[in-house]
Length: 413
Length: 151
Image 1: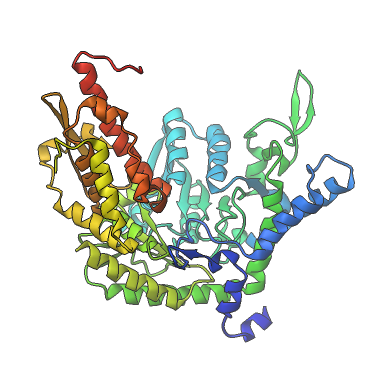
Image 2: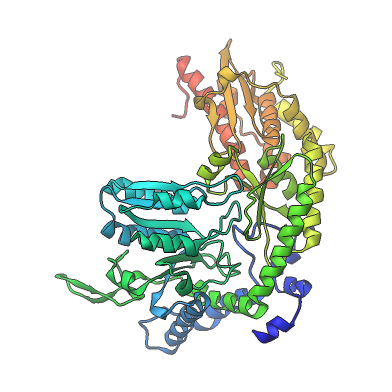
């Protein structure tokens, strides 16, 4: 930590060299990758960790007594330790590996939700949720006759906390909110949200899909009951997610899927389930990608999250400033606290057209509703163009985006 | 725009030749955008849910009419490039018999590089437009009494 504080700025050129995909060209131009909120690129060391696993110690874990199985098991469990540190979980048993944030949320909905939500109970989410944090609760509400309530937002894209206070009541059983919006970039005051929910006797799940890569996550300080996030947005491989839960709650929860790994003893009369975290990890997990995720977390640690955040914030301010100068461009999401995500619309130009024309210049952005259709309806727009920044992005790339947009607007007008 | 004398293949060949004149993708897109701008807007009465084509990031409306054994298409979109692509599809397919429409493989889309240049998700939108046009042709054919050979 102290050495990181002394070092001033990141050497972005050196960081870029660690990401092989950044060397490629798209449509005859150097790739400008601004779709990091969808998934980040992977550094060479993460790719090497995958290759190393398959080349040298590929084996199924936890059961084998041979050397390869022991090595693979040790490496797999080391990632659990690394994740425990990463989010400051009180114990490693509270780190459950899933396929991604979506599966983590569904796990809670299908286990804790089915056990605890009754007819007439209320679940609160916000107006800026990803479909992954809407649909599982809709399914649950429909099944149980429970009620889904929505925290509204203001035009800047911030939660209306007074409205939230009013939504909380004796029937509120769960509050499930996004930590940072994938569309607006808004960082929500989760600590306050959790405090209020707990005072009302509700359990809180925080969707950390967008926040985990940018912010320091301390689940104990936050006091959330569940925290779900994905490895692939944190420079790690796809197909790995993490669900953190408070121990008491996780222990009281019924199992999610039945199969191998999650059992203690099976007879045809009765099966006893394994302890945490294995109780929720049925079947052979995604061993290779989970192992390589540890390398991604090391990359983040070695580079310095604080320095990355500073760099990304500078890019966000620079991009906001430059984009604002484009006539007809309107930024969607003006929250005071934002992660490095910037969404916008352009007068008389469909986001899809802009996306195609930017791609034609090698610039990768996201266009559309970003799996947040209710949020699009709130702003009365069909979709947005979204640029999201990672550690390897530069101001020069933002300039490329700006000139690409100017050219696209000219072509479309 | 509707080429009654020309076959589908001839019009498609014409488009391929036009595209061969462009040096850059910028020029091709400029041309497609221009086609989109020139496509007459669809009257609101046709902008019905049943005329919406699914599979596009943007909204596409496709309406059809059957006259003298021939199918005529009208379409619109809120996105300009898609509109340009529709304009080309209409130019190729409109004014032909259901059989001609059903039998054509529309290889020209690939020949002008549209399937490879447009990302999969977007060309899916293009493919669903083609599919919808063929559905209309099939519906008119069945309605007209003669069942298609392959059913």
